[in-house]
Length: 242
Image 1 (cartoon, one colour):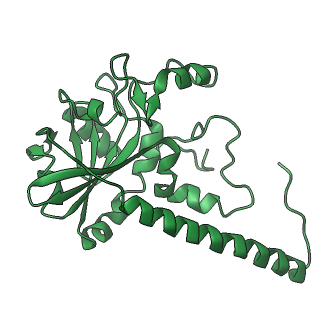
Image 2 (cartoon, rainbow, N blue to C red):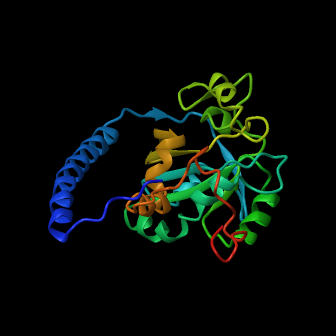
């Protein structure tokens, strides 16, 4: 990678101010898009979803914990796996610190995976996470929200997943996963729960502060191949970070 050229402070300041104009325009565009997102119509959740948690069965309504909003991260953890997806683990490393701030804005947060609860708990203990993590094992939840993919449920990120997976096969190590990562947002009105929003793949970038930090550096994300292929479980990096 070619490094930026070294210039005088005055030349740097001129270039920085030019970029600042573009950054401010992007901020305005982001604010406008966020406002548009808040106006999306919603869909009533008609099914009575229930999940296995450390304190027993909990419904989707229970996960609100009395708050108006609920954010769910769909963590890739197949029922046959012994540990969670490394990329989802990277995302999950950013969660615990925001929980009290979300609660202060009337918003609850939970992570849901298809693997049985015992596997989730073992992996959570290893990773040292404290966020609520529940199992949807045996329910339709993952299928209905398009984060478990098979021939009968081929949609992921609002399109057929398989042509994309075939095109990526040469870059992937092994067959494409049957689980997908994503994030869904729900709003509660009394006991009525509505689905407001879901996003997948690159739509999760705003929730990754590691990327947000790296995007402000000259070297950037340093991803020359498949995105996140460099990511490791946080307890497996060497002392030099690799």
